[in-house]
Length: 306
Image (tube, rainbow, N blue to C red):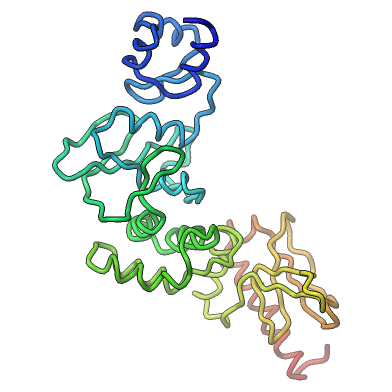
């Protein structure tokens, strides 16, 4: 085998059988692993050390050695669809998350290090292909994750699928109906009621839920103020247009004093909310926003001087 041929082999996951087909014996693969030129992705599958360790690479490796009909599912499928799922608290380590797969009913449950497999029947249209890898469809992936997650994580996930255009907002009711007979159906129905694809990311979603749970008036999500020509002048993560109060998530470490700003000829109270504060001190963040909102309401009513 020429160096060019060897490079082509190592650029994608391969098994020992595939290596042998290309004229590379088991002993050569072992030497390449020992020398650091090749690494093992999962048991029985290898790849060149120069190839990044991504969910796609590990998923491609998994389906090479799993039973026929195996489909990538769960968190791995979401990543392949381009949707990030918050890590479980106990798995927030440097170790790569296992590849989640489902195998058909009647197949032997595979046990391979680096894979988490379960037996499950998939219906028509619940399998699609991403980069040559069979994965559960966006609707099935979202439904599975929402049904097995806590409420906040479920809303973050469903917001992500909506934001990416993988699930249409008008398809959410059908999603609940489709999986009405599955475990976790009540959680799915609750999350569908709360989901909003206008959230720009996880932090906006979690803040929106925290404000809602605290009983504050419902906010508009991703509210945009536009010029007369349609140009976006300002985007707020959350806004109360009636009171002209908007919240922006920032990289600041501390709150910036709220000041009225003239936007499109109207006076808006802009709250610069530090993202780190919202993550680590959600109760204090909600209290601060609630206080500013109530104060603005009183001023708008004329109860206190501006």
